[in-house]
Image (tube, rainbow, N blue to C red; front, side):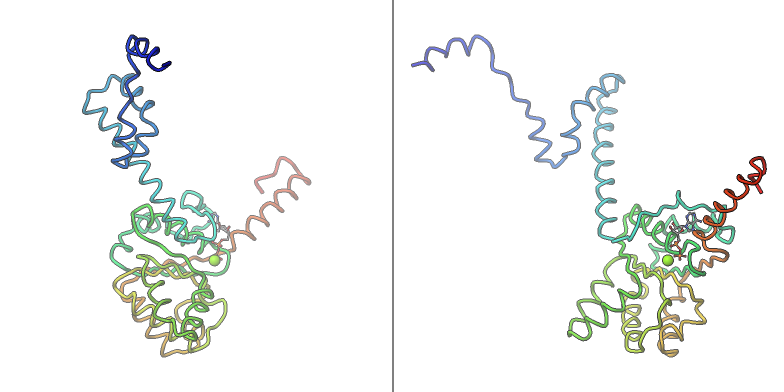
Length: 276
Ligand code: ADP
Ligand code: MG
């Protein structure tokens, strides 16, 4: 009864027309556009954009959001141990690093070509920092990246071998376009492990890039890998298409500590002579 009574009133004021756009955009999976639609349309009106320009604005918003999500996902898959960026690298503090070379590497042609990159130098000079920063650039350029400390990689391969699951492990580490192996050389490997590393390097050879950071020069790899013959075979493949970045000088951390100590001492003695 009450429904009948209300009927004339409902037809007098037209029911609000449901906006089909959010649903259509959902079905097209343009979710960023859907969520920001009102703001973007307001902006298009405010800027007096033509239909075509407005469509461009809307598409840009969706694409920017997708790029951002892709980088976020790629970064979480890469398992970087910390956030380190090229912008955060103080080139002035490390004159042995050529900023132009690093900028070239950041363009990631070497990753596209499947080349190797060795970053070598003493502890604390920024090898891991640059490796992570270049890994992030590779993700930005659309490549898959995996970061693994050398000892963890070797432990995983040895374990996989012992459990009869080496193939699975090799496939896992062969898959990303760029594999970053950090801190090779802090502990020597057992010879069996070196042979497993050789299998991985062979599998990736000319298909995916490897970035290795090490506190040892390639001349020491025989000792690091515990087997000079396998070391030569690994280096033969790694160095065939490779770039080498050698960092010299002091540990950045110690330098910073020393500098802050010096500044404090100088301030206490003579506030005007801080730059000493
Ligand atoms: P390595 O891997 O060569 O032992 P790291 O990359 O771990 O050294 O550097 C040690 C610390 O010092 C890190 O926190 C890193 O971000 C920082 N660091 C090293 N070099 C620089 C630099 N030139 N500019 C800014 N931070 C640096
Ligand atoms: Mg390191």
